[in-house]
Image (cartoon, rainbow, N blue to C red):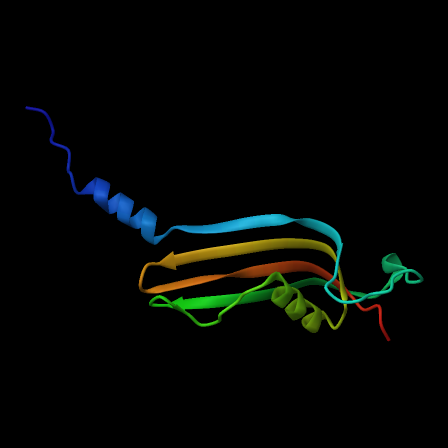
Length: 122
């Protein structure tokens, strides 16, 4: 007699995969990034004071199937980072988005920008 394979393992693995599914996308790395009007013609970014490693996010939580925030944007994440770093330009920036959801229970998604913040205005 051979061993019988359990038929409940397949659906369990599939259910775990669906429930724990998520996605993170790296949208790229940028040398200089801003969503403000900035005049850098007579400003040397390389010599400016900077706040290093600032992370800004714009995110939503999904409770049951209802998001807590209507529209998440890259601009919202950049505004958050610039407010934290008290500046108007970011350098050496990485942009990511993420999303995960356990159906009808809870989920989370958003934008993240991480980099150095520079203040060009007085």
